Image (tube, rainbow, N blue to C red; front, side, top):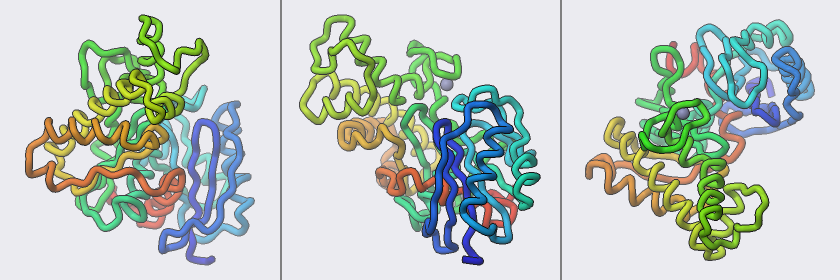
Length: 313
Ligand SMILES: [Zn+2]
């Protein structure tokens, strides 16, 4: 056990902690609900959870955190899923509680590294990761290294503009991919069509989730299928831009909405093929993520193990 790393995946609802072997096996996990009482309570909960794993190994702890942060400064900015957080020096708060050095990483970046290390992108050198769930996020592994950009904010695929006349995004800007293709955006679009009088098995008057839309698509509902065709098409256009720009070998699509399978992947691949150049299109596989909710833990463990983080910054 001495060689295993300890990693933490902080989410808006759950905190997960686990031990990860040098080979990338998650050997132990524990979880607890994320306190909604602010950063100090969350830092306490993380420390408590990590202690439940037993004696800490030497070396750094990797912590995956939702939303924008500075890896170099160890500061979390304003994560949309954590209420009341603003410029939180989480790295120092955890180091004080745990007595070990800590590395913070954006959760989508961590998941990208996890899928690249031990998941659907295993063995590749250039990988684009896109997660589609409550939001749309992403991460880039280029030349075998996580690409963080000048100030650690690279990979925000959800906030690429895909339709200037589109709906307002959760970030407040109009026409971003997340405002069209995230789970809540898909459900919202269906409800708007139902309000306009479109027939659908989903016209129940209750709130709606993207999962229910996926089930209705599977069952043959025309409106539900159209909703995924639309979301898939916009995702595909964004992916085409990434293929042309970065020429990756693999594009990994994860997150809860990707569980809709072909209803999302067929239009996504079709749109990406039409909108990209031939050579980058043929070079890239577009595949579902393989690690589920373990990707973030694995990636955080990998980043912590590599001295200086894998971007060398
Ligand atoms: Zn946005």
